[in-house]
Image 1 (cartoon, rainbow, N blue to C red):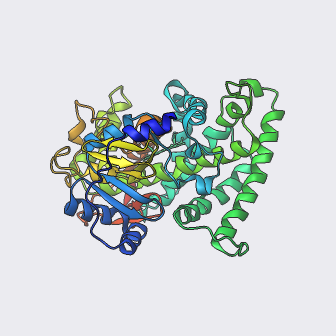
Image 2 (cartoon, helix red, strand yellow):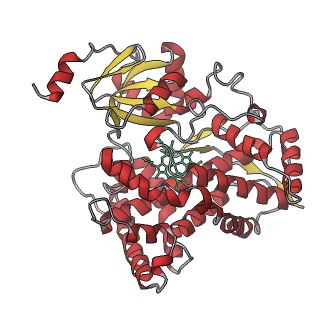
Image 3 (cartoon, rainbow, N blue to C red):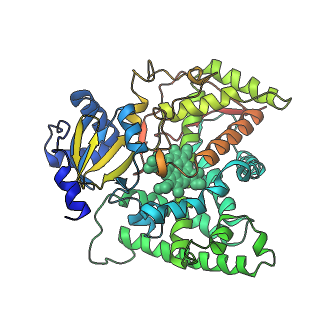
Length: 445
Ligand code: HEM
């Protein structure tokens, strides 16, 4: 008997969580149009684990329970692997999102170092410079949306991290990446038509931008290779060009293009959106804002940044921009708590729902950074970056980036406070942003 057949024979009987009592068509419509709200309503009705049938995942188990989420994230990637379909539908098969098992491990080994520890310290001054450049033009005394600015800061930052020094090709990438990410995020969950309807159709437009992107990447690769200091370069592209896998092979040109696009897309929209929410939140919390300003001023005299860090954590909890992380069941049956989930089912860990759980975060509607003063959040309940072997590669980088941007703004501007109701959620396809773009009124200090 083969190993697989033995496993199948000894697997426990399937026992699925309660099914969502909504017609499949309506589930699909709800998931596509109002994912967050739909999961929230279903969790209220069915509890913290329930079964869905939604395009594009098909049969899936929604997990809105921190303990079970912990189990999902700590299970080996051989049992719970890459979900199908995933962002690689638009990013390409060379993206880390597309990889599983050993190929995924190897790619993570390559990608992780430049976004961790000491390496990211070098980016602090770049981020501060990018922020100063952007806020130089902020209008005084009139409301404006911070989101376009935070998106530009985060895009410029990730471009510089990925490619090193700024080059002429950057303008071209600044022109191509934002609309590509906006359209790609919308198309990722939609079926791709078999026929090509040309460059005026959405998929055609995405392909055309992709073609233009690849031309720029060719130029950047040629420039890096021609650099006499190529061997000493620490940017991500140089690392990719120099890297060799365990078997001695190198990253293909296609994989490099896909992975660079992955980092540019994953690295800028999420961080920019969270920063937009940060401004949306602090302008509505006068005491917090005053304390943050005082802290930023004291920091220049050697003080710490505990409150700002706690604020970033709370923004990420209360205004989670990526609402779920997903995996796929590989063994014949996967035991999740009391449930037995069959092969092929997707597991959708509802990050947003877990962040709203009153058993884990008392009074979850209250925006309160004090939750984390003197204590760290649980790494299994506070999960804006997902978890386990696929946890966000850029988590430390994003945290440092948000910290520097907020610190720089607080030092240069007084942000006016408002008692206006909080902004609503806007889904851009993948990430959730504040609907009005995180509007604030500022005066130069
Ligand atoms: C506040 C900002 C960010 C948020 C909220 C965020 C969130 C996430 C989430 C939820 C995942 C999926 C994790 C999982 O499946 O368990 C993820 C994956 C990923 N993120 Fe981020 N991210 C952020 C910033 C960044 C940055 C700055 C980068 C690049 C430097 C980045 C690169 C990636 C990559 C490459 C993956 C795929 C990891 C894999 O599949 O192994 N992200 N991110």
